[in-house]
Length: 303
Length: 138
Image (cartoon, rainbow over all chains, first blue to last red; front, side, top):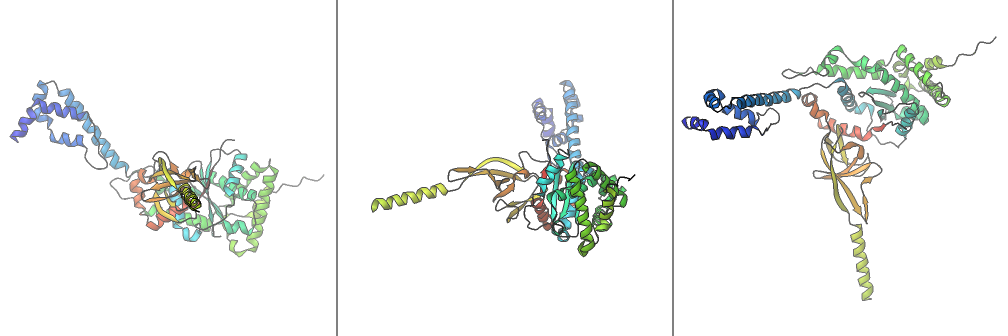
């Protein structure tokens, strides 16, 4: 202790300490940084007189501030580890997590030919004036979900499309594009997010759970909500009407696209009435027959 | 006869030299999706050599064979080396700078989902199967 005090009083030692303080070395995670360790070793209060006589008080203040900054940075870094994703980061993560969890039901891990769907849909969107739109299509080898979208963040779209479904109707690329576009409009309206989300989930977005336990039941419930919307409940008549009318308005000036969409609705209507694998379709998307009626041009009144 | 034999040996050795594969590191990169697979051949259906996660450092290589240097395979695949593995990854999944990964940005939140190895494997497969495109201004 005596030796330590002698050393402390030596100006050479102080000079060395201050020189070292200019080199800011920070540590990772919860570890205490070198600057903080040095600050713990030196008791500035006990050597106040010496510092005062050498006009080094300002340097001490500067150093104390520096140590506080480093300490705060370390605390923030630890706290940031417990950040909860913002809404835009959360949806793509959770949608993919749901797809991974349901691989056995959806059967998306299978070998298929290159249908060129993504290129034709890209061109389709560009022709309709949708630029800088990133989309992902996942083909399913199952009729459990015929076609759907999952939330995937701002200006990003994730579509599911059943290969048995499009094969059984022998759809053209243009018809497939109109089907994907229907989901694109649905995604823009954020119907799915509104259906599966809860107040508890909304309250979590962008938060932090440092020092507490995150309630994983919220995410289990969300997973069940995904299942319910995609496999059972689907969309309401009102939502379907809104989407169908929007497509009708968009396609009206483009006869070939409008005809492809109308033909698609006819093919789906026919399929669900004849193939028992797709009888649940109208429950999810009510209903192709009604959709056709909503967009069918009214006959001009005869005088 | 002797001359013919010597010519034959020379031709054989030169063809062996020509067909020798030379690999050269072009640059480093990082895997930029949640999970992925390094493939044995440049195809989404080929055998997975290993499962990698976002931010995994990669060495992007060129292959020179018979005097021809290739950096892109099957239109969109890069030949890469990651640790002891050498294989193929889609070009669009490689960033030149370290990406901001979900696993790092929300470390404890991600850990709370406690993903199994099977889930990580299938998450990587998901990126093999996604048909990804982005529309552009014409």
